[in-house]
Length: 211
Image (tube, rainbow, N blue to C red; front, side, top):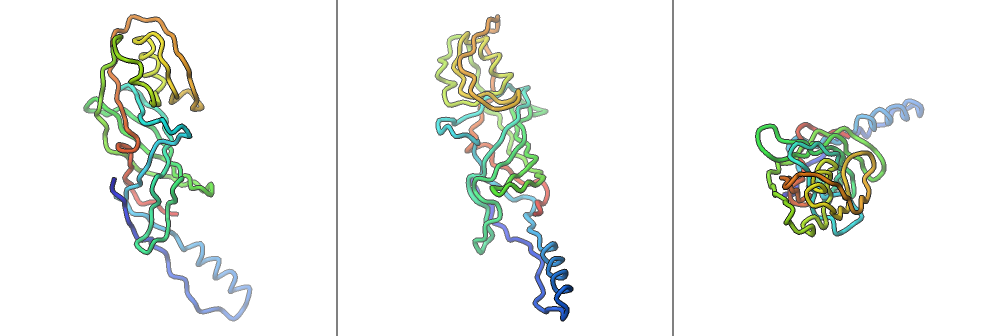
């Protein structure tokens, strides 16, 4: 995965000091307020799915499903001089949305949360994901092992397979273990979109991000 290396745009701080101490304090405060970090549009943030379960390696949603998702910055974003701008472990929140013109999904990010708790509006998207799989009654339920499954996909998969072991479910409030789902239904098969968070969900800034 590509690592976006960028340079922080920080306003220079003047070294001349005013004669009056109170004015000096005010002047420094103004300068610090104007010292902002600008991360330009086009920068790529490398991410992975945010889970304590190391077995989680894919996200499954229905093609028409919108599912909230939280990702974790996997590789810190640095300036060319090595200064860390976005630390590893920062969280990116957003949602997977259906594609308009083909079967698939795409992640839209709306917020960046740094490890220190600071939150920033984020306008970033992943590449479209069009990898699909058709699951039938004859499918091995182990295909779902290590998957995070959207709530809509979970319901229809349970109809198809009868009883399935789902590790985690997206949507419907807090993310958590679902266990075995048992539903009755007449659905014979379902097409789902299979997302590899480590490979598919790196996000590209669509507009400048300023701290």
